[in-house]
Image 1 (cartoon, rainbow, N blue to C red):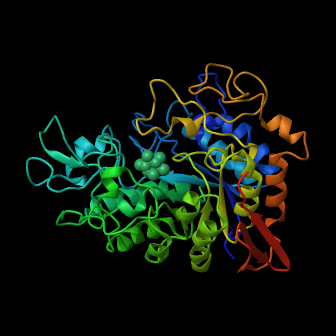
Image 2: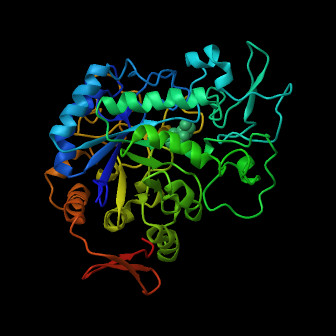
Image 3: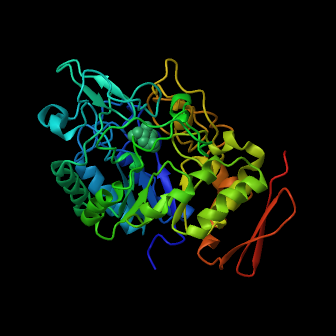
Length: 442
Ligand code: GLC
């Protein structure tokens, strides 16, 4: 049995978890200082959203150095201390690995232009679109050539058909494994390889079950990503990672996951993340994923509306029961355990794709910044007097205790089987126990 079977992995958004030096951004020492909380909560591991140096066009998902820590988060020594302190408490550490693109400010972009994907013509060679909207090709002002970016223009795509890229990335994986990490979440991994003939994506033939921006939704994205040949390439990451946990962000429906699972241990179950609070829809999302096994259950993360906002506060308890009694590995996004909802974001926004509201700081106590920082937080606290860890720890009936209780019982749950049930009820058994999730409105 692998350590992640039945495990709970807690997602930390480092910029918003705990600041230790008063600069208003969270940091690694802050995380280390809060590890006793994670141990108390009972999770098995935590995943750190990117901690690397970054110009922050995509808040860390535009990496300018894969083997260092962003100065505002600390130093490599702080990382080593964090890993040691986590392991002392029996907590495993996962990093976010971003292999599909670098920051345009990564030295590789100038030093190794052949590590990137360039248009063979003057202008975009095809109709591919960026996940954030608009064309996936931009002109590099310095050379006049056009490069591919599946996300922001500040994130040029690496060319994984180039063996030098493979080798460089294998080095990155080994660097962090040598520092003690236990696994990686692989970012946007269905975009790893593109069609080498750069063919146009055909028009969409049916409804894609996950949300897409309007121009992406018009295309069947079969050449701009999700290529069968990506699986062999992913194998090169596996070769470097050995038996460390690899969990993939594959933005595809569940039935597309099996090839990825030839190489990865787990793939996020995105259909659950987007299922509305409706028993039939939840069941439709859960059944194929449970059948497949080896999915990472997830109901929110730093990219989409927070759980309390998406489902409404009335359903957060039942949602926790569901998430933490599904079989396999489960991911919990920081703040969901106290019912934190979306915040107002920033004006002007930091994130051009509108994701600031899901990234407000963790609320530890009733103080104005929620105990997140002694300085001015990069995003304000949402409602620390309404909800915070300290108050909920003191209240045995709180949502936080509900999470903790579910996590404590999780490893003893028996085999999973979906049951037939009335409308508005999602029912399943875990061994002798029947779990019924009611989804009636209100
Ligand atoms: C993933 C990340 C998201 C990021 C994108 C590009 O979807 O979760 O935050 O913007 O990849 O790296």
